[in-house]
Image (tube, rainbow, N blue to C red):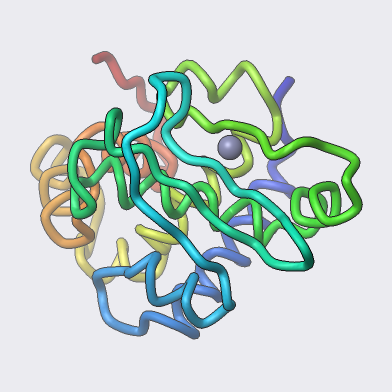
Length: 182
Ligand SMILES: [Zn+2]
């Protein structure tokens, strides 16, 4: 199942708005955003089945981040996962479902394969991508698009994102059809 272009645009605008409010400089800090929203978080070594998890308990939200899979707190994968969990908080439908107990806290895996397997995961990944690499900042950094791998490396270096997530972001930015082969 895929989301509509309108929904993608709506989530991208939401993510960019959050980025501009809390992190006006180029490198987005998911921690600053979480702290400002009163969302606690912790890094720990857990079982191998999730990267991150957003939980709701007694009216409060908490994010668990699994260093077994993320390696270090500053790793690009950690930053993306943290942003993905923030997506589950900022996207109203996801947050309300958790608050109202309609869904259990779900474990997130942010690898590419989850893009097509679960709509909520796709939406949270899309939010994370746009939070860490807002469109207007990408365009400012790149100027014009068209340098392929050089552009992707530039995005990765500027926004402290992985080459894979930067490549996916780049494909979405480019009005010309493209294909990403890993
Ligand atoms: Zn998720």
